[in-house]
Length: 416
Image (cartoon, rainbow, N blue to C red; front, side, top):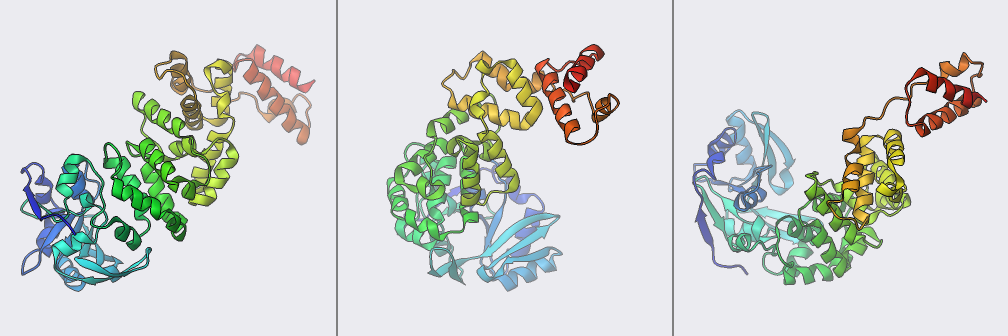
């Protein structure tokens, strides 16, 4: 099923974090007296790829009850976050560590698994999804690899452990995880066996909750090779199962290039708009498909609202009016989406000026108020609201004047 076990001793500076509190204290509490605890999963993977360690998860031979007793005795807090699957969260000095007892799946239905606890590191590794996620790091700085992960890290290849169809059948979310991890860690073409297995299982995505699908898609969208992953998903028909509309793949690829050339941090909602929103009505569709939050939905609506009008050809006055009316954040989103759909050079100076407008110009506050019109005889009610709106439109058209003479002229014209 797997390649021969391999080990690699890491340099002392690579594993120095193992000696730093509070992780060192947690390991000390769990290790010894016949039990062993190792760092597993994403922390080991990122360590080998030279990427930051965001979370440190642990696996242990100690069964949950014993693990709880040990860390509690050491004065640490324990939260039974997934006790039925052998997982607890240990909180040490305010920092959480997920600790899971070695286990094997004994029954799965593609969404949930029934597990039993064990003490076999190889067996525990073989139940995981991808080879690069199945390695463990012991306290002595040795990486233990039972599934070929070290080789796949070197090749920057995302590959299922053992039979790809079987791994996917254990949890259908692994279809999306395959493309997400390919986007984050892969190079070249996706692993052929995994790619074809995902294509065969695309119909099974309908069995997953939309919340789980959303979580994977949003992580995928900000990965460095998100455009390539989306192309691969579209080629297999998986994109259609998730979004049910035609993808704007060139726009997503262009947006990624624009972000990189302008040192803009990738944003999942903005990239979602680039690939899946042409009109604001598309936002409503995605809100339902992906269970988006209200804030995410509102951003998509804004980006879908006549983004094609915000171009250098529309002129500075239109750009300033847009910035004034929707604010700097929404303006930047819309400008980036419009640029992504254009065929202009990434170094185009006019587009550069359009993007940088929020930094070069601060939209002023409308200097007139209802009181300015009431004292001129305009009664409260609908007419006052219309008069104010007319005055604001005239003020914008006059390029946001602030001098008293211009404002008086605007008030006079609005009242007539």
